[in-house]
Length: 309
Image 1 (cartoon, rainbow, N blue to C red):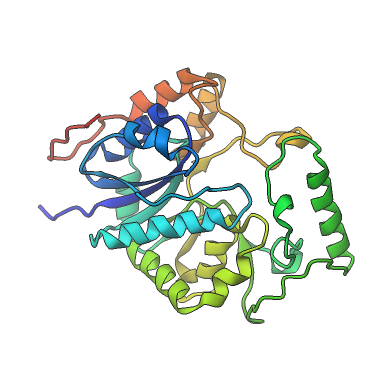
Image 2 (image 1 turned 180 degrees about the vertical axis):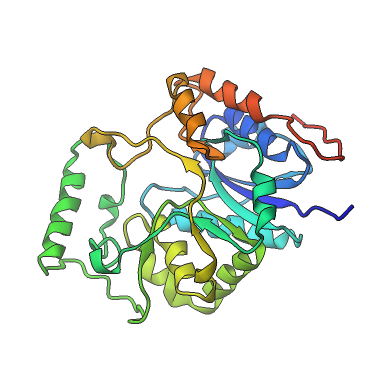
């Protein structure tokens, strides 16, 4: 029987270690995955000892404050990518997920093995409809998440409105190749190991790329999409990351996925996706336990795996 390659999952987490452990157990239950975890620096001391102890799980020793809308999101991802590559294993795929995700359907491993070249991420070409998120050098206080009509949120809209009218008050003056097109989408992705290696090699050899995004707004939703779509690997991109999300309808919720509850279970299962977010056991533990138990220990492989806690 041919050896089945392992998949590397990279998790960015900041809360709810018990819930994160349920997700990790889902991922490693078939014996063909390793999990690499970055814990937000503000939560590291309280969470690091609570994450599952397993030969399949690596918690990064280095940690940073990972802020919404900030380049630290990108830095966190590159830290995880480097840790995966340092493991020096022949992974089939490298998948970025958050600590508030769960598997909602079995079969993702078999799906990945069905075509080992594809890159899975959601994206769109925004070159003709750029709203200035990358062309503006956003002041630090504007790169924060607000769920109410905060003055800084209104200020962001003003800056974008002025940009659309041809006035850029804080232009991003860093180097950017004219032939490069911008792409954006959800930050979560699944890429072959070869592509993960390419991304890190590119960043190491092109310091200008990271520099350009350093003071942009929500660069995590642009950084890797743009890198890949301006590379030879763009032909392998499948515009789907198989992640179920429920978007809010109110002003305060429009730009964020909403917390999922047990009332959403029929809709989640109907989606046919492999993953879903955003779960929080403090808000609804029933839906967390439902999917954690539904997909856990569902291996049909010959290898017997012991889940460690």
